[in-house]
Structure formats: C-alpha cells, structure tokens
Image (cartoon, rainbow, N blue to C red; front, side, top):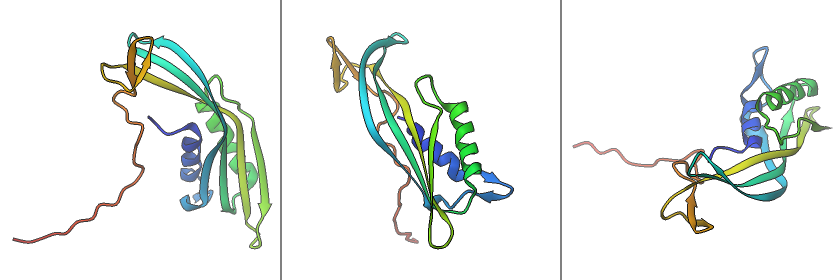
Length: 157
C-alpha cells in the first residue's frame, strides 16, 4: 500500500526548494491523520479487484521551526493538491502560523478532507471475506518500511 496523501504532501514539502533553499529541514516536518471515517464499499474492479472501502480523513502537516514565508508554503501545498488530489479530496487548506521565541514560525496546514481508496484483489487464501470470496492486498504490502538499520560484522578470511 502506498503512502497516504498527507504523507506524500509532507514528503513533497520537505523536498521542494525555492531559490536554492528548502522550506525547512526534513526533521522539522510532521504529519498525522485526524477524524478518519471509513465508508464501506463492495465495488468490483478490473475483474478480480474490489474497492473495499473509502477512507476519509483530515490531514495535518506541521513544520516547526519554519523560517519560510507562509505564502510560499501555501503555494507549494495548493499546487500539489491541485495536481494530485482526487475527486473526493478538498482543495481548501486551513493554515496557522505561531511565532516562536527565535522569530521562526510553527506552521500547521490542515486539509479538511482527503480520501484514500482501499483496494483488494481476490485470492484463494486472503484474510478478508465478502460474499463467499476471499481478498487480500495483493502484491503490495500493507507494511512498508520507510527506513531500516542494517547491522553486521565484516570478517576477513
């Protein structure tokens, strides 16, 4: 399963540059989901696929500290939503900026509604059952490591 839209937008904002400067360091970005709700579905797709549900939520991105101008952050976020948002996603962004002691800002962006489709494929031994058919996430895994630590020793023979 790919990253959520709010994670994709956060990653986009963390990677963009304007006039040779990033908006903030990668470690200064955070995102989370609020107020999620699931709308069940059972729409057949592509022969053996199933739209199992739609997941609607509010997505929040926080940047702290942030020295970039608010208009710049809003422009990047707005254009990303216009290019990547779906039919059920809102394009309005709520924005707040609180001044920190060092004159940086704690910026928070809230998108009131984002929608993620939960799609499954029919398999013989899938963990999800509907109308006598079994389903799973298919080739994509629900658990994808974003990073890992590999430890080992090198021995010379």
